[in-house]
Image 1 (tube, one colour):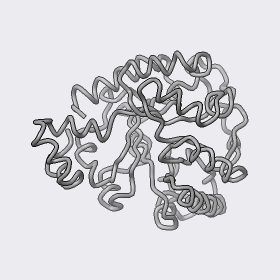
Image 2 (cartoon, rainbow, N blue to C red):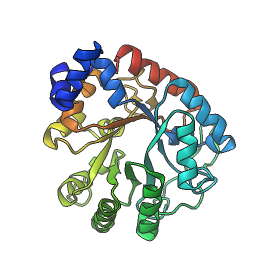
Image 3 (cartoon, rainbow, N blue to C red):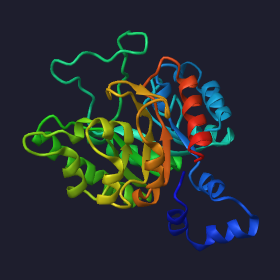
Amino acid sequence: MYNRRKFIQHSGAAALGAMLVSNTSLAEIFKKHHPVGLQLFTFFNVMDDDVQGTLKKIADVGIKEIESAFSKKGGYYGMKPKEFAKTINDLGMKWTSHHVLGAPFKMPPGAKMPTDANGNPLKIPPMRNLNDNMQELVDEAAEGGVEYLVCANTPINTLDDIKASIEVLNKTDAACKKAGIGFAYHNHDAEFHNIEGSVPYEMFLSQTTMQMELDLAWATKGGKDPVELFKQNPGRFPLWHVKDLDAAKENILPVGSGTIDYKRIFDAASTSGMKHFYIEHDMPKDPMESIKASYKYITETLKV
């Protein structure tokens, strides 16, 4: 559960005063400021078959914040930014963040085409990216009223790739600041591996001023301790992705059914600068059951 002393320091006298006046618990105040969110990539294989119905079921679980991703319908699940925002709002949720690619999607040499939960080749639609469509994507994010635009992935196969990506990320960060929204980078595990003598994630931290969306499971798989990253870069991680891993760090699981110590991580929320966290499970066989399990663990066991 969120550390009491850190919560008071992080939230300030106003939140503490509200607690004293209303007899509201610290856990309830934390939930108000950090409601449970969901990254919609969890529903990539089924979302576009019934966008409205899927979002309604997600809201019924108790999810309050949405981070959108890629849609087979194009755009924002077949909608314009303001239309999608209204759809989310009408269901009692808030659209707070959106994922985009850093560069055009390409399969790495020798890699196999990703598959869905049933083993079928995944059909990836054409997607705009920050390298080619940066200003357009920034303008749409601002139009939709999201707080953050997030780069979900970018080429890091070579040192030249990393340097080129940093240039795009810095330009996007500047454009987002001008538009009045935040910009962050989402990691997988590869960013923590050595590439030609350099570690991409360390370069991103040192050569940009953008914020980071730490995918806690991918960072753990990459050999990093999220809490130590928070201590080394306090306030740099306003966004989290929350999912779990098995003991071999090979299979993604619902939160609480794996090996990641989430109590310890949430206790470090104020150090990280966390503002929003999103449950995510990369295209599970039953995404609804997965998020229900994660939501139950987060709210009932962690009491977040």
